[in-house]
Length: 197
Image 1 (cartoon, rainbow, N blue to C red):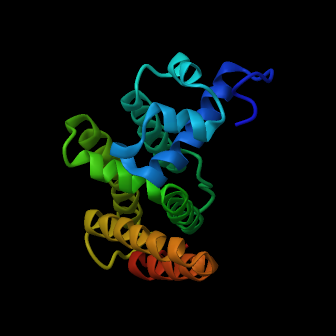
Image 2 (cartoon, rainbow, N blue to C red):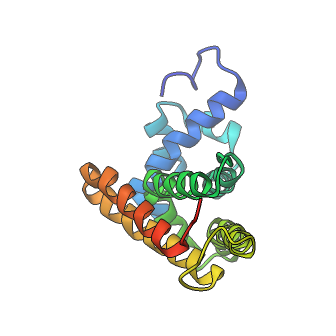
């Protein structure tokens, strides 16, 4: 990978490029088959260079899982809040697109979560914190009379997460459908939330 092995980049940029490459490697090989050697080869660097950033494969994987978690949490913090409808629409579209972008890594995280309690906690955090925040948002809208939820807020937030996950699978299998699936998700969301403004 150009940039890590010698170009004048900030350390944080080099680390980020290494993580970008590592995400592709973990998605291609899975956790068990990924080695420091494979991470180095795919990044176009040496094994010692990988070790200069991360002491182990597990540390690379943990950093990736944390980066995915942080992206999902940031989605809700950087949303247009000019109207409840715009907030909901922008939020769920960003959520779907993040699921599509990280579908492979989310799959590997899920698999690792089955046997690793630390990964289980990160996996749960990736899904639970955004869902909880979403449910609180919907509860506030309903309390202010700005939405007529079809089901309780927590159930609706869980449903939207499930639909986004499934639509990410469909969009990954057929990328040409992403716009169609995005539009369908937005339409379903607006119907289920009964947003008034």
